[in-house]
Length: 607
Image 1 (tube, one colour):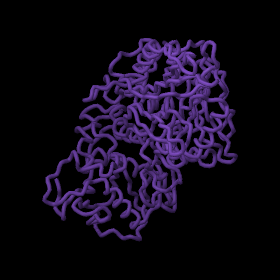
Image 2 (cartoon, rainbow, N blue to C red; image 1 turned 45 degrees about the horizontal axis):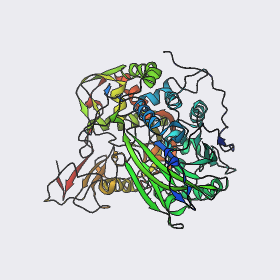
Image 3 (cartoon, rainbow, N blue to C red; image 1 turned 30 degrees about the horizontal axis):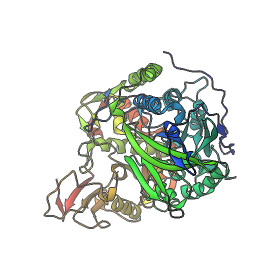
Image 4 (cartoon, rainbow, N blue to C red; image 1 turned 30 degrees about the vertical axis):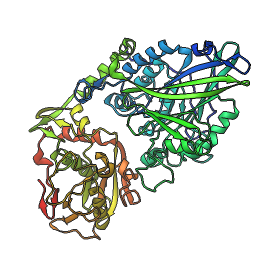
């Protein structure tokens, strides 16, 4: 099967322009639910008319079409026995439609679709969908074939720029929703805020289902380079409060929210924007007349969460299926027709597991060629390693494999600033232990080996920082470790991720030497901090090579977001690593490894 390069006739609004909201969709010829045929006297013996609707949902697909690990060049497998990919979801969806009747189902997604795997990267950068006559994105092909009705925008939809997102949008047979993705100037919707579908019921008015899409305010920080001055992202709560009454006034009998936002009420970006990152439960509590919320963004599994609305006392049901197409949420909604209108009587949520079914052969056949092209791409050999490098201990020991990242970033920034007024300043760099399982084996090194080391599509930025600011940065990073007394047993499984801090929000900083004393309280752990063999001068200026997520405030590290930007680029750090290794030909730790930091307790090394 050749790559599908058909032209799409559907138009997409240009960036920043207001978009007409999605109108009511033509309804399939539905039958009344089996429940509606049941007897039951009410109001003088008249039969009660009921309708059953099942809303299915996925989220955080992140480019997973098949149950395949491109980094390991093998079927995906984990200790829990999970399976991944839209090919599995397709089988589950077919089962649900057969059980419930297709005319009684709706299929939604809550965002983060086109970034996350080498397959997603390939069709954004290597064989880009934006090229003249370019391919149709595999995620669009799969989701169209499965029959998605609508999807909310995720923050990672913006990672490759607005042109790529708009092209993907044009390739989808369903709307991408974002009520709180607005034109930065006019504040009018830049994407359809909602989608409405009518379900036909013989002899009765149709059941009208409205789906409101909400995305994440953090986009304004994380992808500032692409959206600043073009798009704005107000809070989920305020936009839901604006749009839900409109949907009800338009006759919506059921209101479902698809929200790319977790339930915790917390934010990873501090106070850089005034809107909550994980606001789905807040929306349920604060905004009346919502029946169900499909939750995304947090990459956690929530079969069913019930939240009571503060105004009405009604229960709102939330559910988040596990990411990467590992789970499918089912909202089972029962409606009753009384006094001339449909009313939601009950909502319940449950999950189905992708590991319980096989791939849908229709999806396998549809995208076999695209999959094979990406497999061939990631298996290209770019160099040879003199020894095996791994991230297994990188969370708590200075690992050479992370030093490779910081060395590449330093080299790229030095070259970029050569001949400028900042060329004489020392360059330092940050990097995080993203993966606990990445390995570059001794011998041939492939693109997939390097991609597994740097799993995000981050780009490089150079910031101007002082010694005092770097010290504060390191102290904040060191909060990642659980405080451990000098005489306590050290368990590496519980030593990190204090207060839920993820691995990607712990940073190495190269070019300095320092100890992290984990017996001390957070905020006073950095000791013996030196530069060039002498105690760090707080006034010393540095060029700090950081990824764009960190540069824009991701993780809420101090000072870096507001620091002066000296240079930035759009080439991914992953690509820079591959270029560096290709130019060297040989990957030898002697060219990049150094011991910059160590963990101590009361001055004694932990390891």
